[in-house]
Image (cartoon, rainbow, N blue to C red; front, top):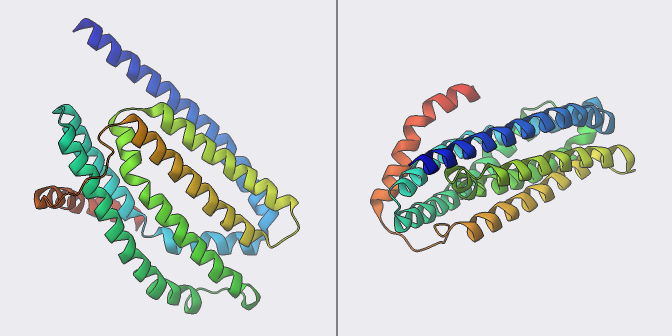
Length: 248
């Protein structure tokens, strides 16, 4: 028991240190990245990017809701040492993510596209590239959305080293993109959002590779257990209220 308690204490301490280092690096990198983005994109394109991305990411609360719910049930399965239950939760969450993604695509490509084209005050000479940015932002959102089951597995296993490394890489990559935009003679807004899409794909690939190789429970199986789906969705429903309030 003493060895187990000591091991848990060491894990808590190491995870805390890793997260503090990550937070410090991200703070420094993000402060400098914003400066580069403003310089590379200019005031108008920087405003367009944040506004259009804001329209897309207004749906990101769905991702955070599912992440919280999935991680909670992962943790229960790990506590019960039930690998089959973990696989069922993982597989059900993948199915939920796929269906939710299809619904998001329909919503964003209809109502979202109409809102960007007709409601937002976009300079006429930047409307074409704005619509491209909108499409890139949708795909970036979907890639982020598909990270949820794998990232939740990493959190449930308290493997903060992987999370800290990947998120730090992502921040440094964003800084690098901002620097490229400042130094390459092309449409900065188009280039910036396209490269962000590439980074999102790389990050998703790393999380999928890490989770599937480190954890036996991250193996997709066919699951038709309605109880698993109802538990995930009902728990998510209760968490929705607070998340929507934060978004508002």
